Image (cartoon, one colour):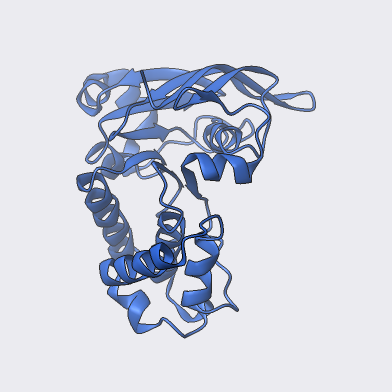
Length: 247
């Protein structure tokens, strides 16, 4: 049984249909990519998983439990940690305070201290800037903090929404190296990304969304072999702008 199973979800914003029957699965230990042009329905799908948006139809089941109607806090406690677009750290708080907020659902203080030590060792810049305001970090460093903060909840799955957005090419490479490290540690990840070519290099499987529907599902090699998809979507490493429907 898949760790995460989404079946035929539909999400409308008023009269606008943002997601139209999306189905996907993520197995334990997989990195699964969710790609598509702006407005394809990727972020709405992610927001549905974490309980911010409630689908009008369909099911979302995680580790055998329905997520429909659950609060974001409950979903976090079930083991799903989001790293949402724009990093969304608290810039006026220190690196330490941001990390402790990530562990807000944990009651074992010793475990929290162990996790802080683990992730500041994994991300040495966070140890170096531990007592400094998070807003002083560079964009790439803030992305590391956002990931570390999510990991403080000891999740069984990370949802990563556009982690390389707005970063320089070097920092984009650093972010993908980080995702590769997390994958090699056995972390389960659902990844939304505009950088398709780099995404295909690290995921096990990929779903291509277009106008709220799944247009393709398969392995990276299967996607690369689809000449029609290559021409329509994969120009220049990102995605050609083919759709203008809601995100």
